[in-house]
Every structure is written in C-alpha cells, then in structure tokens.
Image (cartoon, rainbow, N blue to C red; front, top):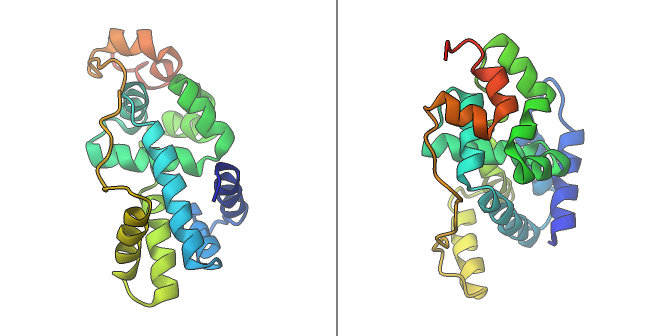
Length: 191
C-alpha cells in the first residue's frame, strides 16, 4: 500500500463516519473489507505517518489541546491527527499551531473540553480488522511480526530527532512557539 492508497483508505473511512459510527469503527470496517496483506501494509504506512509527527512541537500542541499529555495520550493524539485526514495531518505536521483553525479544536476550546483530536481506537484499527477476519485476537500480532521480519525490520523504532525540547508548562514559551493554540487554551490561565 503506497501513501496515496493509505490516505484514500483514511478518507473512505472518514466518509463513512456517522453519529453512531465513529472514525475508528468506520476504519475497522473499511480495513476488514480487504485482504489480510492489505491490512498489514496499511499498518506499515500508519506507523510511518504516526512516527513522522513524534516531535516536541506536535507534543506541545497535544499538551495544550488535551490540558496535558502523557506518552500514551500522545500516541492517541498522533492517531487523531491521522484521523483528521491528509490535509489537516499535513498542515499540523508542517506547523502544529495551525490546529487552532480546526473546527473541532475551536469548539473544544470554547467548551473547555480536552478530547479534540485524540483517538485511541484509531491506533488499533488494523489489529481489530485483522482479528475480525482471522477470528483470533492474537493473529494480527503474529502476522505483523512475520511481516516485519520478512521486510528485514527488527521491530526497534529508530531514535528519531524530535526537534528542540522545551517547557510545556512555561506559558510564555508556549505563546512564543504556538501562539494561535495558546490564544485558545491559555487565555484564562492568568499568565
């Protein structure tokens, strides 16, 4: 699965979202309609785009939007960026502060909610779809390990450069680095 097919899969799932069917569920349905090999190739692309936004500036955006952000929550935020679709993902990857213009982020800030963008279940869509096809909840992880081994991957993540680390709890630093998001989320902080 190339990157264009990956994003096409995301868009197909996004178009199937309803009030009763959240994105992750629509994505599982879409992936489960494909052969198991496609699901593994999807996971490979997912890991690539998920890893590409493993950066301090993106984490800072997640920290503001989420009212804090643990390691696990940052995984969910990056999955949520993917769930927003290619256009918003690419905007956020280029400049995380642009998320201040996303309607869900604006609405969440106004309502003082901290769930905008975060999508834990999107992290596991491939495994859920594979499980649905295989009828076994361990089948995906066994197949995934075999797939990575066949491609010469050892399963170890590269120690990528996350960019410059900075203090997320320093309001002035956050205003300097993420002025638009800070205007939404730090306006009542009294700093």
